[in-house]
View 1 (cartoon, rainbow, N blue to C red):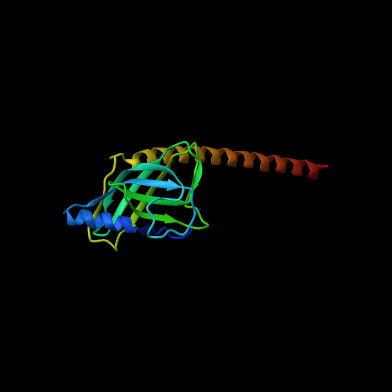
View 2: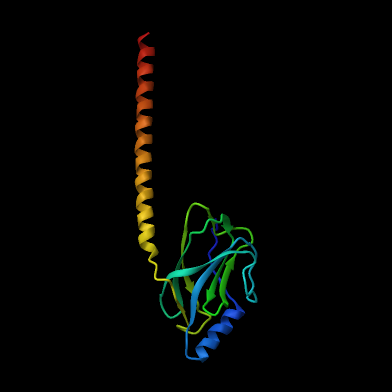
Length: 183
């Protein structure tokens, strides 16, 4: 998994789409996030990911200031892959921003586990409030909270069982040592 900061680059196609929308008095809207398995050094002339695996709708998003957006999405497909590239797509299909790293993937997407990600996009190269987020309205916080509670509960039960087992083992060893000392 990546330990480098995740700083997407703004594409030329994305800039053009944002400025076209702004000249019409509109905001460009991020509606989808694409995930892929490619790993490379991205450039601003790109219009697509190198090896897109899936494209999912944004679940939720909000403005966090004039130049920052908070974006959440859920990839719950059955594909299994290392996420090595990430793209943010506008409503008109233009690739606004993308991230990739040549050697370090972002994370692993398991076939059996949904991948819930949230990003804060800093768009300081764009005019203030020129981009918004249009999501499905799906609240990922609730589904994540439920899953975290289930996981924490299972982990707690496992830790308790493990500690009890270790205690029995220590007590057994103590009895053996006592018996050896009696002989």
